[in-house]
Image 1 (tube, rainbow, N blue to C red):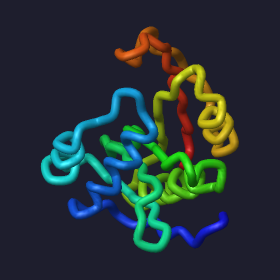
Image 2 (tube, rainbow, N blue to C red):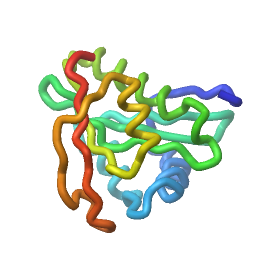
Image 3 (cartoon, rainbow, N blue to C red):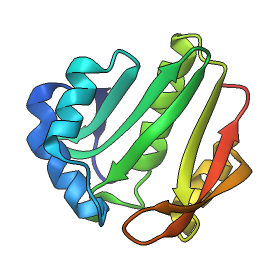
Image 4 (cartoon, rainbow, N blue to C red):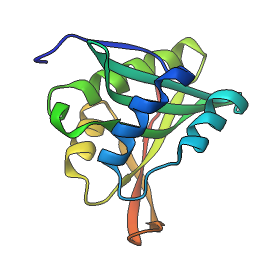
Length: 150
């Protein structure tokens, strides 16, 4: 990594920076209110931010359900991609899940997202199925990935 990056829990005051990352990363970004609701009302949700200096450069989130963590989103702003921040966020999210007694982790990823698929494979995730037309804005399929032992 070119820059020192700190990963910490997301707080409501982080949302301006999170929205910059979100809009830079996704063609159909989540709304600010969706993140506000996740942070304030969803007891299953856990979100992390990656901070370089005082700038939020990425974030990741998961829902902790019974004994499995379901990754909701992982994003790194364009100019900080390919520096290991996505991997760092996933490693910290997996650690958080383990610390909360989760035994496995699952996520969906765009079939076309080769960089993310490669990262998840390196982290021990394997393909477990497909969701046809999962991404509503493009009708792209999503691969379902699992990691059984955290």
